Amino acid sequence: MQGFLDALDRRVLVCDGAMGTVLYARGVFLNRSFDELNLSAPDLVAEVHREYVRAGADVIETNTFGANRIKLTTFGLADQVAAINSKGARLARRVARDRAWVAGSIGPLGVRIEPWGRTTVADAEAVFGEQAAALVEGGVDLFILETFGSIAELTAAIRAVRAVSPLPIVAQLTTVEDGSAPDGTPVERFPGAIEQAGADVIGLNCSVGPAAMLDTIERMTRVYAGRLAAQPNAGRPRDVDGRNLYLSSPEYMASYARRFVAAGVRLVGGCCGTTPEHTRQIAEAVRRSAPVTRHAASARVTPAAEATPATPTGTPPPSSDLARSLASGTFALVVEMAAPRGLDVEAAVAQARRFCDLGAVAVNVPDYPRSGARASALALAALLEQHGIETLLHYTCRDRTLAGMQSDLVAAHVMGIRNLLATTGSPSRQGNFPDVTSTYELDAIGLLNMTSRLNAGRDVAGEPLDGATQFHVGATINPFAAEPDVEWQRLERKIAAGAGFIMTPPVLDPEALEPVFARLARLGLPVLAGVAALEHARHAEWLSSEVVGVRASEAILDRLRRAADPAAEAAAVTTEIMAWLRGRVQGLVLTWLHGSAATAEQRIMDAGTGADGDRSALHGATHE
Image (cartoon, rainbow, N blue to C red):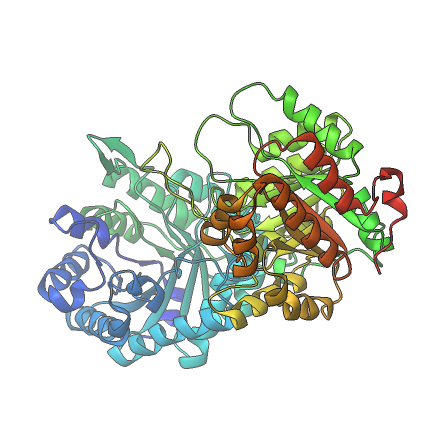
């Protein structure tokens, strides 16, 4: 057959429609790996290809959209990457013969890559390259990289394919209704970065129907004169008796195929919800439409990868009392206080004010995964700030999407919050909700990258804000992690992502943590050590057994178990740990289990401030 790109330059080509939609309609359950059917049900897959070729498709895509190592691992098929991809290519090749081109389908990894996820760009490229090499071995004519929601991941995939093959690449992003990528990147930023990475055809697919996609394509034509592709869904899915159904008719899709051609698109097809009948009518519409010769774009928009960063010059001044204390070497005491259950938070505000009167520079508001009706940590922190009480908002990624976290951070800054502790977050506890799940679109490193970008005056898409946030952000370390080397490597990445201080879990084994604090000191960042205001032996046992990163020494546990006055002995142990820490860290974060007796509270707060009964000496106490 004639070369794919040569043919595309001469006429409009038709790509096939959805593979998964047709397989599902034929009884394949959604909990199966559709890609693995290349091995276990090759005749079924081949028949779907055959129907699309009969319908008039010039290009058929291999049944390998999710056949990368990361996605296949979820089905226990990581060792089948090469077999599934090469067989998928051979199946399509056998059906296509000389009647259609075979495109190796590659989809996103299903995990976020840096700067928002744990997967590095190098690791992502290795996974994409493995899949691409197997598709080449199976005999594909070109590649279609599709349904990518991130330019960074798509360009990584393009580079990976280019490293193993010179075959043509069609690179397609997915957008939301307003034409931007899911992370907010405007469509005008797409073409430059994607073309620069090595794509031959740039386009859109999935997520939206043809009407919204046409609007986005028309915006792209204003900044890009190269080859375009469009593969919309058959409208937006609707829930019909518990099933997601796409209801756009083949005739409707065909009418938009003509409009895509008129807009300059050279590769037209369908995505979710489309069938061989959709393809047949699209092909008929395309055959009756003359291709449009497009001229150079009127303007070139700088791609996101080339956009001038909004990194502030110099070191910004501290934005909070906590930041100023740590910057000046003044020992800082932070006291933790969680949101109470129910609607009445007046007592919490009063307690927070009491902690500040006793010497706390800020109140740490944790984001615990608790069940029950409680105000969110963000809401409580904002309320305390309104009452003139500085907070350290403990913010987790557990239950939030990337877009949701960005909105939360903007809201936090608007409401006066300046101190953040960025954490991945522990999994949600079931409590009264046995079906509860967690989200984890980002981890702590991604969250730190997000805050750094906001502090530089840009959103996650790289677009300029109307100002810059002023967050003072910290990161955590688990000193007893099962894989210590991995934990320290992650801490280094957190620092590189913008962490300005480090916080530890509560310390209950000073001797074991001596080398940890020595190593932390060499990193050059202020350290806030966690301290639990102990109440009794059971409290220490619970912390040691059920709280991540905490381990109590047998000496401390034995001492608490033998105590004649458990409360007094627990307070004594707490103050001794605080005294040991004062010479090793720049501040303490004190956690209370329940409201302690006033005398114990006074004694522990005095130990934290170093006031020895004179709380006015707090702000003059300098770290040694």
